[in-house]
Amino acid sequence: HVHLVESGGGFVQAGDSLRLSCAASGGPFCSYNMGWFRQARVKDREFVAIIENDGGSTAYADYVKGRFTITRDKAKNTVYLHMNTLKTEDTAIYYCAAGRSLTVSTPLSAIDSWGRGTQVTVSS
Image (cartoon, rainbow, N blue to C red; front, side, top):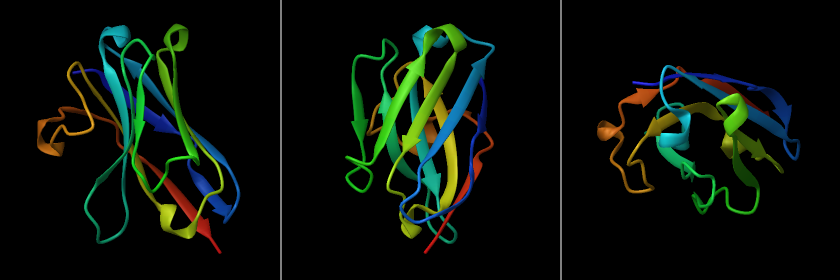
């Protein structure tokens, strides 16, 4: 399992931007597809974005498409989530995930590398 540590969360106003980071260690970063998920209070964890191991392909949930961008820095073993035009409904704990075969349709139960999450709170 690769070890993942998220950072960059915080308390912001609607319309603001944030950049989340996920630092990976303990595994070959270049071999892993990386994803961001989120879980709001009393809701299930949901997919946000994914980037393939070579950084060449990305995919987004409809509710963040056009506002969020996922990128990765191979030299720093880090994946980022650039979040713009934040909305109150984006309030959640954001989790980083890794997997060699991670895709947008991978069941949450099949993902075995997770970070502990970082809280994002967006106020109106």
